[in-house]
Image (cartoon, rainbow, N blue to C red; front, side, top):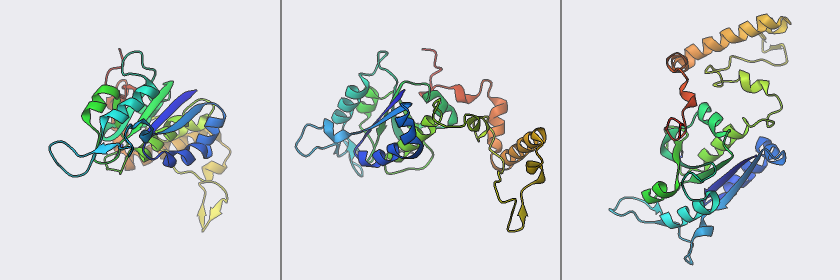
Length: 249
Ligand code: ADE
């Protein structure tokens, strides 16, 4: 069972996401436990303050270190070798999330995802309590909640017993560094467009080689960088630790 704790000032954003569809099924099957915690529960003043103005001036507010560190330490334990799993801060400054990182994180027993808001977070909270920073792409969102949901979904669907058809994991885009080719379902003819004959031939070997060719063709056209990555990385970059270390300690 993978335990995922999310620290946020908007737990209401996470709750419906965690209980519907595949995430809901994964929780019912005991494969994952997703809990959203309200950061304000760790504040000590009567206004439940989680933010303050930045030292040195500048626009906007920053998240204060005390409630964040208190929440992280209560949920995940103090930073250090005894801590179970990883504490990840979602931030545009983090290492880019990809399928390889999802595979690695799916092997952890506990993840604590910290959602930033406002203009950022006091650096001391990151230094004292966070193991690594992760970004879901080169664009800036209003907070870490949507990135946390994207990560949770990418990780949870990889857990054994979550998806009905394990084979679908092997053939899909990125798992083997190529995109999926075109796919077709019924009807055989739609608006004069026919499903390629090979897919209706019943010849499994021919279908498999057609799919492989189309997948490669599409990858060459749309994402040639994925093919370069496959050639240059021995072993692939996907085996790196999310924190950028070599994973040896
Ligand atoms: N918070 C704001 N933008 C983000 C991004 N791109 N990835 C992760 N966390 C974020």
